[in-house]
Image (cartoon, rainbow, N blue to C red; front, side, top):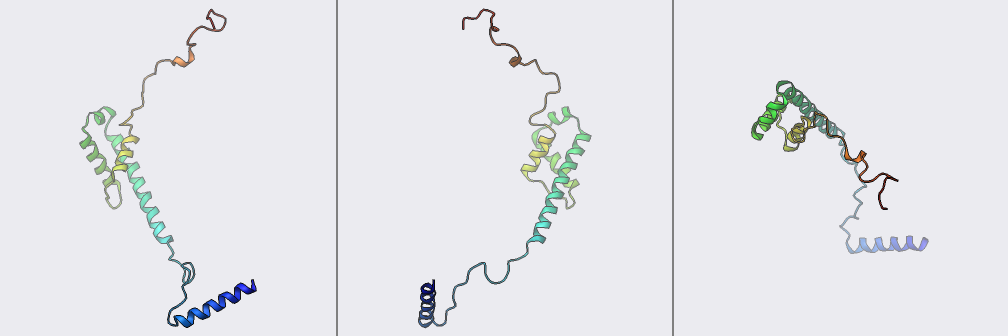
Length: 139
């Protein structure tokens, strides 16, 4: 350990003699502290919360104004305009949603994959697919 320390001191001394005007390189993590990002993170989180709230209110408004049949009879462009306008009406800065937000609002109203409201047929998995045990199958 002592030898290594002497070697490093000798190396530094020869480096200073060879290049007297240059500084020693410093590690990037040493020196002044990094910028505090908490303010920017708080602004970003508040903006995301406002967008989610605007999406929720837009879905509630559309659900209140239109029934399922009217929404399914609309052309896709009309639906998209309806969602964009409703979102911007409910956003504090009247911002426009991106494509993913419009898609998630449409999925919230079950426009892409509507849930079946009537009773489904009984499951085939409950029935025995062949002979019951001891009933006559050649196993």
